[in-house]
Image (cartoon, rainbow, N blue to C red):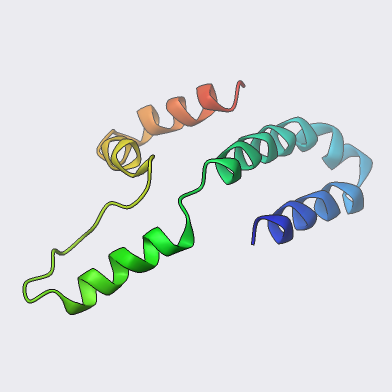
Length: 95
């Protein structure tokens, strides 16, 4: 799944007109670097599958489950106002 996304992004960069490429290539490269780092730390599919099985078989399942390292942080960020979330994203991309 990760390789397909990386290949698609690279194809988008390669096929973009020069003007568009000069504007967006740095941003796309930042996003790709972040995605590559996330891919290396990704939660194993078996961990996610175990959580899904638990949710489907629990007598009283929770409405939501947090799975993986970044889930708690992502949930906390989701409560921030939109402008703050955008600022966190921009800072994390190094822009």
